[in-house]
Length: 232
Image (cartoon, rainbow, N blue to C red; front, side, top):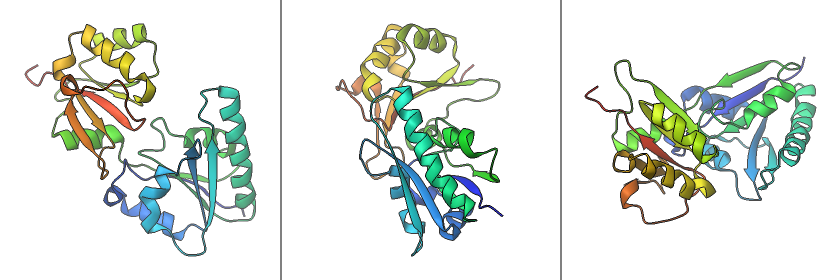
């Protein structure tokens, strides 16, 4: 029998937000895998560090910083081969994922490469935008309102069009796209209702109205909250 491929959401940053199931699976799995980008330490591993057990094999999947699909795909394929070798030995592999594995998570690529060959289980995790809303003490939607989740990587015109139609929205993965996104938000007249959150739930958490933020760059783990009008 082969091992199981386990996609484990570890939440947005606070280790106390790990689910009991995630803690158990991380502690029991003989192999732990995680992604790091550009040589930086893996945030997912940092979150789950206290759950790791002595003797576990760790597989670090290093992704390049360049947004070039071919290079990223090659890195995923190399990582999938390493994980697959352990699964063939009958060893379960827990892949640690920031937030939830299926919300802009790297696990989706590994699932495409390995999911049809090996038994797979996915453990959901708390998403960054729900943790950010909690930190801001800000309800996002109610009643029949709809929430739109957008990546900051969208072109400015498409981002503006989708925001204009949204009851409420969150914009993820700001990073180097922050200046573009802020300009779109301001042009739509949404600046005063938008909240900026970085490193939600972690020790470095920061919550501030976007209008009061006097910077032109933001970390990758930052986002914007645009809540719905609660009177509607």
